[in-house]
Image (cartoon, rainbow, N blue to C red; front, side, top):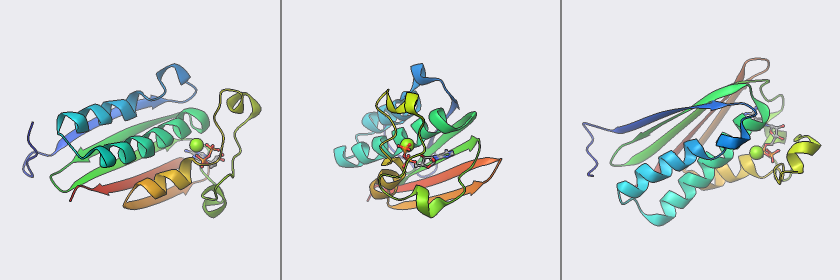
Amino acid sequence: MALDIENPIEGSFQIIGGNFDNAGEASSQLKNRLLELNVNDDIIRRATIATFEAEMNVIIYAAAGRLNFVITPTQIQIRIEDMGPGIENIEQAMTEGYSTAPEWVRAMGWGAGMGLPNMKKNSDVFKIDSVIGEGTTIEMTLNLT
Ligand SMILES: Nc1ncnc2c1ncn2[C@@H]1O[C@H](COP(=O)(O)OP(=O)(O)O)[C@@H](O)[C@H]1O
Ligand SMILES: [Mg+2]
């Protein structure tokens, strides 16, 4: 499959809060598209990590959300939008090791407080916007060139 600026490849996936059985579904769909497109391994790895962490946060903290991606010849654009409690202090949430994950989530191996820092680290452009009581939107771009 070839990448064409006139026909960007797009995908959209619903993410349901609390649905740990489907954890990783949205990020692996994106990964499969990137594999089909023969995108560089390191970029696939970074995109998959960043998307997986964002997807997990919707599952853990929000009621529901949606992942949208657009792949053009030059960029992967990823947007994860959720309906949830929002984040009161984004700077604190972005701190490595900071987590409000409840004990039962930690028992499953989540809640190391590295998700947001790793999304930022693995994307070329990272934007987060949150409204208390409404939800959180994360936009990540990875350059393909
Ligand atoms: N989508 C979200 N909605 C509400 N709160 C969130 C969301 N994503 C992250 N947070 C808050 O930011 C904190 C840090 O997130 P993260 O770095 O992914 O670490 P972790 O998920 O391991 O706690 C979370 O513990 C939570 O308090
Ligand atoms: Mg997380």
